[in-house]
Length: 161
Image 1 (cartoon, rainbow, N blue to C red):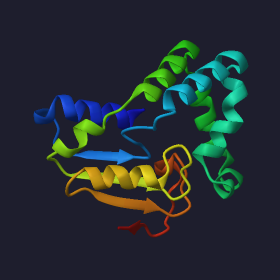
Image 2 (image 1 turned 90 degrees about the vertical axis):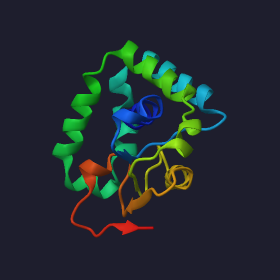
Image 3 (image 1 turned 135 degrees about the vertical axis):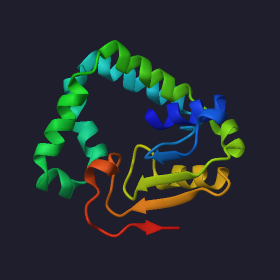
Image 4 (image 1 turned 60 degrees about the vertical axis):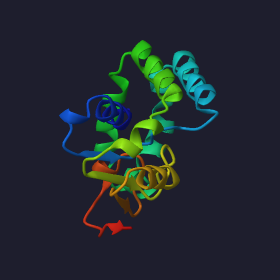
């Protein structure tokens, strides 16, 4: 959600932004996003956040990372579980409705687009769309990373294009 907020802020207040790091994010989740994200909100309401932790963890971290860093997975799960259910559901609706693509061509600050190679939530294809829409941006793909690449990136070399 932070990446969407950053894009909206940069689009609405360009004079207040000197650069953007868009990590594991997108400007638009696609035509079916409102339906999918509303379904996620409904799942949260029916199962509770605790019922979604396993699903979320597989999206956040690779299988290897979850096995070798259980303390990080547990810490992120605790943060997730501390969310207010109504706020989480509202954020799902916001993400489903978000379409920030119209802001991207006007961005005139340095923009680094970073994505985990295995990010299923905001895949590499979405990062490439951001990169192509923002003139002069850079794109870095983190090998083996999923949706929380800053948390799971290790000393592996980064692959840039």
